[in-house]
Length: 79
Image (cartoon, rainbow, N blue to C red; front, side, top):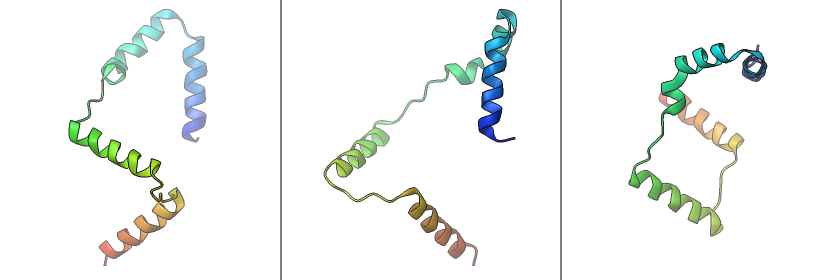
């Protein structure tokens, strides 16, 4: 089963269960659900720099091109 199918099944299940079960499931995953991601100022600055580069006409690499590049890098590393 694909992740998409699993997610759809989970959504349907959660939508159909009673309040006690919802609370029990939430309790299991509460830490992960409530966890806030905090980014360092350095990381935020890097993201801002990249967005500005893009907005100013900077060239971007497509997902398929990046996949090819990563594959080439990985194959060099295994030699």
